[in-house]
Amino acid sequence: MKAGALRKRVDIEEATEVVDGFGDVVQTWAAIASDLPAAVIPVRGKELNKNQQTTAELSHRVTVRFSPDVWQVDTKCRIKYGTRYFDIKSAMSPGREFRELVFECVENVTYG
Image (cartoon, rainbow, N blue to C red; front, side, top):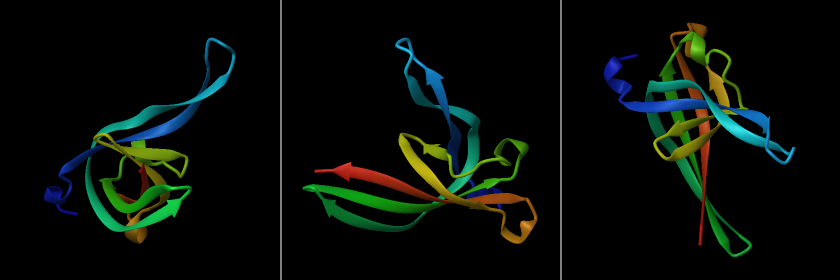
């Protein structure tokens, strides 16, 4: 993988549950890897109309270098790219060489 291909910066966040002041369990997100060089490539998009709202579902492929910080990333995690959040649907290492990790992600945007 060429270094010039990894021009974007992303954070990988993991869902955690904490108890708030009222005793309720609340889901929050904690960064497990920050400021990772990445390639963020849009793959496809589709729009769905439901209950008079339009929802866009955008698929992306995010590639990062392999590191111990990202070894245990799974579908319970998400990728933060600027102000956008991508839900991870799958993670793989091409060729099983553990040089890079490729995440198939979905971004859901609701408007209207």
